[in-house]
Length: 427
Image (tube, rainbow, N blue to C red):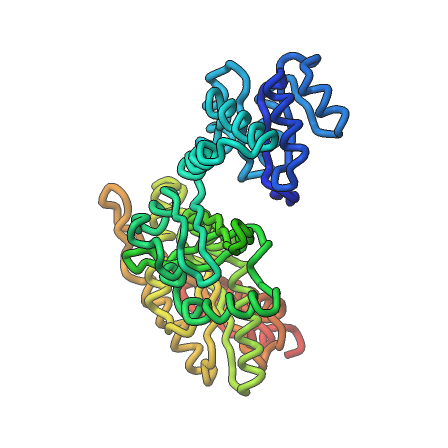
């Protein structure tokens, strides 16, 4: 499901009584916060009416409200109800603990309300604000105009591995890798001089950062500017996104690789073949496309079972990878079908030698489950660029036709597409 883009940090309020009404009213006046929904089992609650009057979605079922807010992965849930089970419901949906509830919400609401009504008790209010900063899940880093770190909350300590004492007064570029580290001072100077910046005001920008142990990791940064007591400061809200990036990498890998053998799949193979053809055209050399179908695989699958068949395919894949050059590609494109790209193969004779090498690699017995040893062979078809065809689709089709001729010729052998052409009537 696509992540919704909104202005302000997304908030869900659970409980629309007197406290929820006041919190909603306060958030509606704040451009930094966007109330995406409010929920209460009482459809006549005052907060529900206020939300409806202002076009804010309302729910009488908390579970439905949480599901509706899944589009906002960084949503904060304020629980003003008396239901202690809300935290568990939130964890099921978002997979973490992002609930502010009970006394915390009341304290937060009272603090902000008092600040709006009076300028007094400033020191007490600052202490309450620091308490909130210390307990938020994201790292918060404050720097001055010189780039020196003025604030570093516990979440930032956990992310970077530094204690607050180690970083206060140090230049924030200590948390950056090169070349960002060398460019940082000039970047701040340019912003102060011209007012032009690439990062300020951009929410969720992906950047690289460095931990105390030297490990580089991906980080999400939202940076803003504030003036306090006549002095200018920059605030960075940071989040370690290492796990998210790993998941993205795995998904990208699975999209282009076979789940069983981890070889390239049909999509990646076709991309590699097309790229190889472009290189061959530019550098004026030959490329061979091979189509391999295993001989005897169905019998093993039927007699020993699918587990043995899967194990055989994995072992076959290892041998095929070892048989070809580092510049070549082997892919699994079907049940027991494999395709190859042989880059800059030189001559037809070299392609024939490679096909023979593959057949020999398959000739040794395979040790399968329960100590069973099995034999398979391979029938291979070969088409050549640019002699036989000049596009990927035709090359693969021709190699497939040549493979069927190899099957008809006794199996465990190879044939070129030119052999197919010779057998046609009139040739």
